[in-house]
Amino acid sequence: MLEEFIELNKISASDMWRLGIDLLNSPDDQFVRRTGIRTFGAHVEGVLHRMKQIALETAVVTKVEFTEGEVKKLKGEERKDFGENFRFTINIYARAFRTDFELPNRNNSPGRRSFNTVIGIRDRLMHPKTAADFHITDDETNHAVGAWEWFQSELGKLLNSTMKSFEAYANEAAHARQANPPL
Image 1 (cartoon, one colour):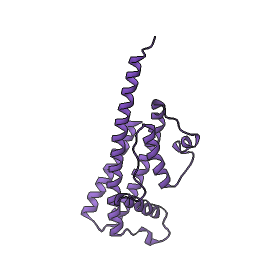
Image 2 (cartoon, rainbow, N blue to C red):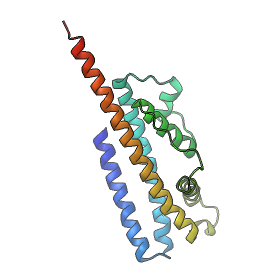
Image 3 (cartoon, one colour):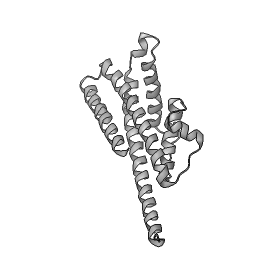
Image 4 (tube, rainbow, N blue to C red):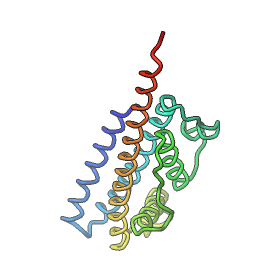
């Protein structure tokens, strides 16, 4: 599972970096702007999906119990809106690894506000009602850059936190086995 997560992140992050270069070379290109926001949305959704799968597997090892409702959400049997799914996935992933990582409050940073804004823009692009829905402004483009930076930063913090927590859990388990060897 972890290998798939790393590969998915590597590919979609590579796409985002390529789009960043295209945006620098053609800052007013609406196609590049729209493609960047759609790709960002796909990147986030893919990462969240893999995180749910990893949380389910990790909880077995770390002996974290999920409610029936949480398991349904993790398995995708119960759908939530993007924002709720995002918060749920980040928090449940951290819990599975027994870490104290907390996602910052909804709008307490410019990056988080940009993330929320870009998710709305992505929804507008995926479900357009008028031709104007396809137009991405300079301000929206700046939000997309801020959202990418914020998401990657928070994801890095979460992964570092979970790795430290998992290492501590593994050390505790090893000490427990040494203290109580099998008969």
